[in-house]
Image (cartoon, rainbow, N blue to C red; front, side, top):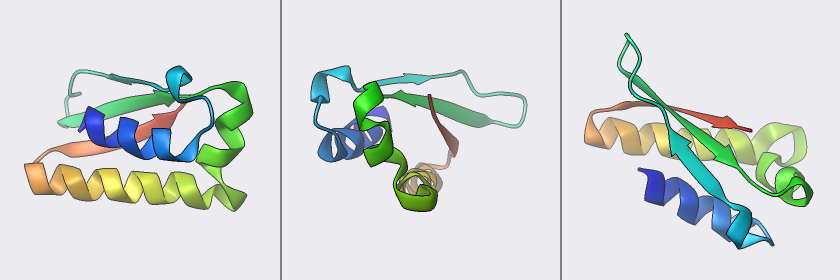
Length: 77
């Protein structure tokens, strides 16, 4: 799952070395929270106009989580 988020983020940004993903342990509801951080200059590219790209990233990750039987949430830091 982490690899998928890194691959998607690196496809969007200019500074590919600044992409970092960390995952929290599942909380009491079984949700795994992934934290995506990118370079300050690439934040707009990851969020997109009116948050559309960020929403699409969350949808893709949620769908991949359903496929693996895991509840997933993505936070962009």
